[in-house]
Picture 1: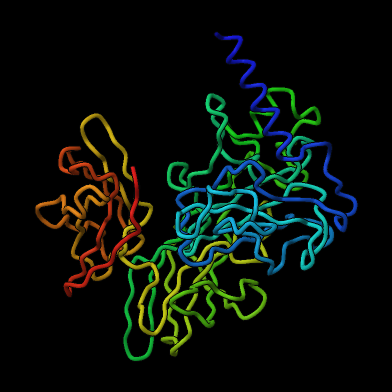
Picture 2 (picture 1 turned 90 degrees about the vertical axis):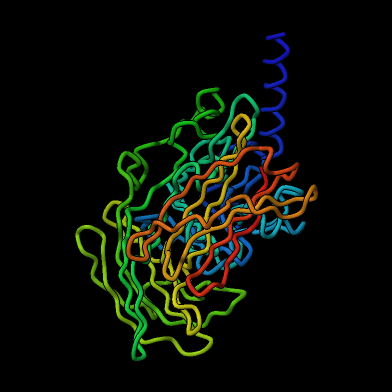
Length: 409
């Protein structure tokens, strides 16, 4: 039996390598030919809100010649069946909380060609996201982003769960907001970012390296990025740019153009006052990331406010997850801001009995001074009456409600 398991795993691994097109070392000398940086195995990034467009950027820190993806869209919110978003059929749909990274350094709009470790910055549509680091030396991987994803050698499946792995891209947190006299005053907290690399324990890259599929090895000291130390908090910037209810991304994320710097206190706190934005515009507050001594050129995480929405970091529940534990279902979620929030309702949802409110009284908010908080509540399986989905509803002090996307378990 064990022999069959080993053979099956070898066959599956061989299939993975074939699908990925791992035929040899990447051609790094001339990117005009092709140098893919694409999800080949349908290993997703999960718990990344993508009901509205997500954004991403890749660059080689400290490169002698500027090397980055510029304003090219390298994030696939859905598999469209058209390159480069055609590598995750049936596993990546708009609004499902899953995204893929897919581009080619030989594409038009790319600046330079990497010859060392690169950083990938992912920003989901709420400004949260991840920082990935890829060395590119291993011939079985090249710049496949999945090299930095977590990999289960038992099931031969990989993913990068932004919630479970505690990813942080330096996005500011709004702890207090006041709008008065045409001015918006923000009190912020900027937490240090986290990098997930192909050198991190339990990744697909480490699995291939341990199995002898990376004879070149992986340079975990980095050509220009020491992995031993996490990247640092960069600077805080603000910019007023067009925005809409369907696209809340800043169009321009280059810190050198149209962004103003603001001081950050040693503890990561900051206070910023900006003019209330006019209709159709948003105030964006974003941070950069410090890699070694080099600051990223582009914003790596952001929050925003519009003329009607005082804070895009609204009290809607984020990173909702539900898991069955014995005869109970544990529902966990977080908030970035709780300004104007009274509490939460949790509903069982599905085809069995429709929506069923699970809590008898509103779950009280516990964020201090309008800051965010984390929650975990448990309900018996019987209360779901056959439903297998959860909806978390935020109840505002004025009686209005905001709903997070439905989550299955």
